[in-house]
Amino acid sequence: MFRLSQYMRALVTPDTAPRRTVAPHPAAGPQMGMPLGPVVIWNLVRRCNLSCLHCYSFSADHDFPGELTTAEVFRVLDDLKAFRVPVLILSGGEPLMRRDIFAISRRAKEMGFYIGLSSNGTLIDEQRIADIAAVGYDYVGISLDGLKERHDRFRRREGAFDQSLHGIRLCRAEGIKVGIRLTLTEENAADLPALLDLMLAEGIDKFYLSHLNYAGRGNTNRERDALHATTRDAMELLCETALDDARAGREREIVTGNNDADGLFMLHWVRTNLPDKAGALEAVLRRWGGNASGVHIANIDTQGDVHPDTMWGHDTLGNVRARPFGEIWSDRTNPLLAALNQRPRPVSGRCAGCRYLEICNGNTRVRAFQTTGDPWAEDPGCYLSDDEIGRESAELCHA
Image 1 (cartoon, rainbow, N blue to C red):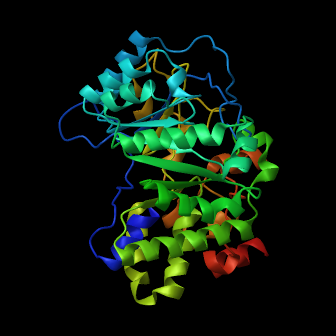
Image 2: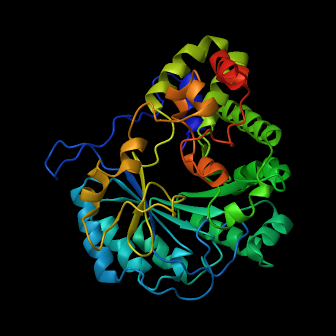
């Protein structure tokens, strides 16, 4: 995740930039002083009441066999705590369709995890909001794919937008930090300015722009992906908005995900618009380190399989029913995990020649795999020109 607003605020108010180590997590037991484990996005249930066009998990409105039981989930929570995992994002499917979701959430909260709930928002009603508030989620994220007409079409459910917005308002009324997430496509990019306006009007805390990643129905529908020019326009707007917020003292948070070229785009934007700040930003971005799949980001799916992130369903590192999460995550005999933790990563094409590989870390490997069959090929989602990523890359590409 690229925390655009926090970096922009740091340019206006120094020493406020977020930090993240880029060192891989060593193989280590649960002793004091060991590094923090990864953020874990946990797909607890595959069932969902919607069938969205870009769903990465091929969810549907029926039960799927073989999902972890409550007792198994509790045991895995103990393993994650022992490995010093700091953050759990509980997802699905639609996590509110899992009958024990609040029991799991309460236990995780009592254990001291930061707990996020990733929902489509349609099931957050007057009955469930009391349970959601009682858990004390640190954050609730709700997806919106545009304004009403477009959102309902993407979600393939009439009235879905109104239900999700109602859920957002219920969370706000309970004082729960809530955010909206837009998966950017060529079709819905026009609604981005209106969603940013909606965010201010509704007092929504966070906006997450997710670039389309090619997994599940997101891969089936990848022809809907935003063109590079559209992506650049969206990022231009987000940079302008974040700078306006920083100067006005607004605390809303704008973040992006699934395209680590965003960091380099921001650097070029700052060189043009705030040139005296560019050197400091570049140093911070190099510490940030770019793509964190398999390093600082992990996924556990409904069957207990562990993946480098939520989009890597085609590659499994191990299963938490068979081995503790910490053992799986520390096992550098796994060639994929070892390569993801390598710096620089063994990428090819434009990525290999990029002067700024240290900043983006090769971007999203899943898009490369889905389009070429090679996880280390150049990422087709990089929307920067050869000049922007360095003349060396341009020479390599056209040699």
